[in-house]
Amino acid sequence: MTQRMTLITSACYVPETKLEKIDDLQELFNCPQPLNLEIGCGIGDFVVQLATRHPEQNYIAIDIFNRGCDQSSRRIDEAGLTNVRVLRTEARSLLLHHVKPQSLHAIYINCPDPWPKKRHRKRRLVNPDFLKIGLHCLEEGGHFNFSTDFVDYGIEVGEMLLAEPGFDNCHDSAYTHELGDYPISKYMRRFLDLGQPIYYSHYQRQPGYVAAPPPAPVKGFRMRWVKES
Image: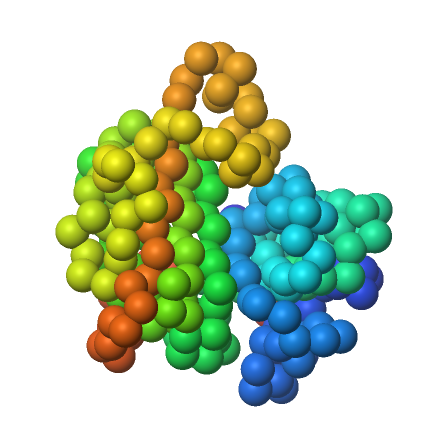
């Protein structure tokens, strides 16, 4: 089903046509600062918390859903934040075509679609190829953060990161349930209130690691897309 499109007029929202005209994502901000990416921003709760805590950093928040981008933009405007930009785009496309090598300070992925059916798990966003794309885009010491409420996905990604050359683990195990001061979105809070743990992985790109050219996404992941003007 094609998405019903809402016109987003927020100054923090970047339409696809504008994205295609720039050479560097830092051009979207008033001043260059360490650049972070949240993949799957939902209603914007997480990125608003993070950007409020760190006005000295810039944030790109993306989602494939027009409604989520609209809600995120509204929250960002209500918070009076000028260091966040919202884009409606697919993560791999953005990373491969619009993010410069070693230009991201951090990547955040919170509670992505777990594709719970076994036959669909190849559609999950985070896989070994995606981690290689992430390594290509992260700066030395850059942070890769992943959280999920889905047990199988949390274990899988934690072990995948642990086995990936180029990443250093920031915890004593492949994943943890201790979130510390990590911002908790409303979606994450829903599961925590039910007594269900969040699986959290935090890794850093090794200083001096030479990342290979990123692999192209595997064909077969498709979605209906309404192009914006």
